[in-house]
Image (cartoon, rainbow, N blue to C red; front, side, top):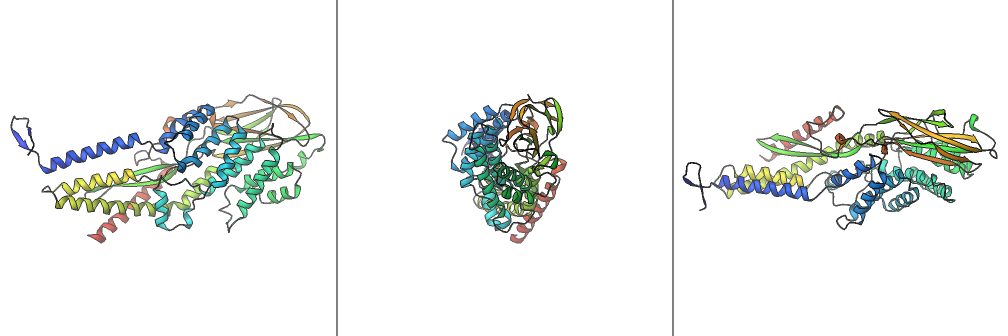
Length: 465
């Protein structure tokens, strides 16, 4: 038997409990090393976020290009990486390539709708980062919306308007397929308004009116009485401002003390991010034309979808927790049978549960370089040359360099501003996991989630005791 020298100079035999502690520590160290060496999707996206939100979208695009070219990234993340890349390219003014990427992803994209899934299927997707990423319904609609935007702004492409109209027709199919309720038609106001604008500019007025009739809000991008100028002597400028940062998914982790042991609950949650800019004002030749009105609150739709799904997500997370617990408890019981130490089972169960929790994190992948909201303002102006400026205001102010535009009949000019690329990075809004200590007041409901999962775990353990 191996012996070690004690502090008093006497040798003593190591007990099985000490050996177990040593092996458990070694196991935990190996687990930590594995976690460090295997970066998650969120950890890879952190430098991209720093670059994008610090006014370097071109560098963010270059970083994403290296990810797509790397052999360490598989097809499971390819579609999502291409959407992130499309966002970075759009913010950098590379609209043609962004539009091509969006169209490429659109052809293969699958939707993940938890409301229609059995719990076992939800758990299989909820805790599987090795499956192809699937979009939520709001993310799915965002692909088509951004596809229209990125085609409309290509002023040097003579086919841009017709391509945008094709996107609008595709959107019509998406919005009308299936038995969707009004609540499930996420963001259709802006999507329908923009589709109507595309059709109107193509001269397809009947189809434009079909889209505009679906708009429930006050702003439809339809020309008003004041804007109806002689078509041969006027033109249209459409200013689109993508404002703020949309909520993103993060892992919420909390330790649950049950029956003298610590169990790890992991839940994917939607977390809101701070908005630096809240309003945008358009200036024409240095004179204020008006504030750009809100058309579509994408972040609100994401949160609505999450709140609708949260009960089923929690049930799946609790089922996964109970499954891990039973596996770990079986390993602890086996350790007790093969060791003279009464602590063998407890240590084994603890480390096994921790290991399984680390190896089965919830899937927090999401399209993260997206805006909180879309704002749009239509300007019908007499033909001529103009300086169009945009001023962003909020916790800081950004005066964008005025853009010189030539307004011509039947040649719409669409200007697109991605507001939060302008130095809005906040280190505190990193992509790290949430714990009860740093959960904000906005996430107070997570405490109820954790309590409900703990109650389910206690009931399951009592049933088997």
